[in-house]
Amino acid sequence: MQVYRLPALTDNYIFLLLDRERQEAAVVDPGAAEPVLHKLNELGATLIAIFNTHHHSDHVGANRQLIQRFPHLTIYGGAEDRGRIPRQQVFLQDGDRVSFSNREGRVFFVPGHTRGHIAYYFPPVTDDEPGELFCGDTLFTGGCGRLFEGTPAQMLNSLAKLRSLPDTTRIWCAHEYTLSNLKFAVTIDRDNVALQQRLREVEASRQRGEATIPSILEIEKQTNPFLRWDCESLQAAVNSRDSVQTFARIRSRKDMAKLF
Ligand code: ZN
Ligand code: FE
Image (cartoon, rainbow, N blue to C red):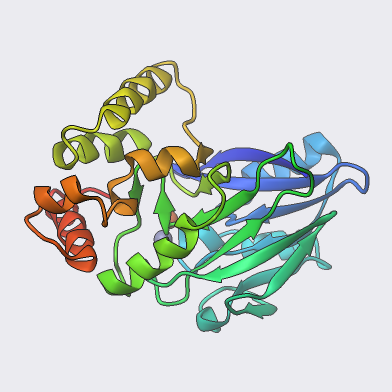
């Protein structure tokens, strides 16, 4: 399964999964149709599935247009998003499976950003390849989604599920927010050398106009403050000894700075 990253709207990414043998494709969170149709045309592939992570329009905006063009495709989303995802056909719950090509994906229910958010995890088929996590606006590279419809405890619980995946897992999140996220992260996690190093690398990649996604879970665990609620130095930085409170305080500082 090949994954293509398609820039869309202002700072979104749509991910296109390709089964080369069958010339079939699936997309994750198509917020816009044009980049998807363009890539399908270039690849000569048919779209057979849409995997939505949540109902926000920058993630589902092209559902209607794409199913009109490919009437046989299947639209997947979370069960809690029933009525909010255009033309949704499959209503997924935690632990459900989805299949595409030779891969079977596992569904995680990850409320917090929204109350219906899900993530899709495709474990590796062979030992020498990574698993692929499509996490929408839950886990971002260097950050996490804002809590529009959930509590800090819910979001922490959701992120904990994702954090327990293998370290080599590739993180395909839906926005290019990495640089802004890391600039905020260094203001909280001040002595984290790995974080400072990563910020320099990301600054350089963005200057060259490169995407910073996918990231790798191991790097997130070392540098993303929203996966480090149980790290003593971070707890000390926000004057807490409690994981949920630490997480909540970091999130609210970021909200107050009007950052993603
Ligand atoms: Zn969203
Ligand atoms: Fe979004």
